[in-house]
Image (cartoon, rainbow, N blue to C red; front, top):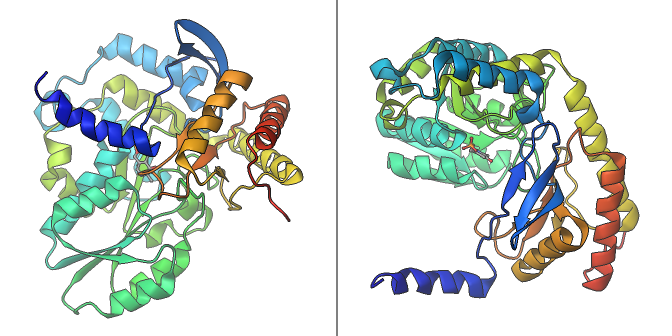
Length: 404
Ligand SMILES: *Cc1c(COP(=O)(O)O)cnc(C)c1O
């Protein structure tokens, strides 16, 4: 093909750097999580998945699966339209009410994904509010960055989780600016958690709105799974809380919650909400079931936390370096894209352990890592198997250990 050379040149550059992405071809088997089948060179092999964002295994919970299957039988597959043109199904409204309640807000609004919810909400706020300035944490997710870029609003990047830097940058803005402080609670790659209260204090001092991405925290933190802001009793101090239905809730879709006026504003002006087909009713019903379950059941969260603590302790005992953080995310630093990919391949080929290498541009160059997310269904034996595998590879590949 005449144009392929153009594409291939850039792909070759990516391959030369070690940053080309190979997807693992998996078949998930309901009820077996975190076990899955991996299709490889014409064969099927059993693997244990160590990098799933279905953090609690809710994507295979019998009630959630049944809700999706039952609703598909009752309502059919697709929503049949955009929300405005025949696509609003009663299941969407039920889910939005559930989400508003989860975060203690008046209203909620569904999107096709968490990515789209960030992109659409931030681009609409930034584009339509008078003299908008968006103050963005330097490690914000790509979906927030793209939304801010698309809004064409003034953007100010503040140092990651640095409240004093945020304070200085807010103070330097003109009085007539509409200021929006955009940040995350749990940062997905380092697993660190934002000082939400201090950020709210500074935002209040300067009359700024707060926009919080709780994607990696919903379902996981707080007595009802409302996220870190719930756990810290701070939900009412956040102007807009954004989340996903695709990670701990185990389904698909994204959302924002906030005041009725805020949600109505985004509903009425956001292109990424208006001009796209609504979520399938079955997806909405499954998400509602998952959220309701995690509002009252703490068992999954407790078991998950126990396995996170166990893996950390075992890695420490073996001197395998990982980032210490207060969350459920365990990043093991490799700091080299080629080595990172190689270790991931060895873990899969030799030990049946699947952990995707995390390379640029997901993380900065030189901070390549393996990112482990233990869940309630990883057994103690699974953890031991993983630790022994890492130990073997650390020796074979001569990777530095922690010298504590
Ligand atoms: C995954 C992710 C999103 C996007 O959510 P999806 O529902 O997967 O599109 C948004 N923000 C952060 C921080 C994420 O990690």
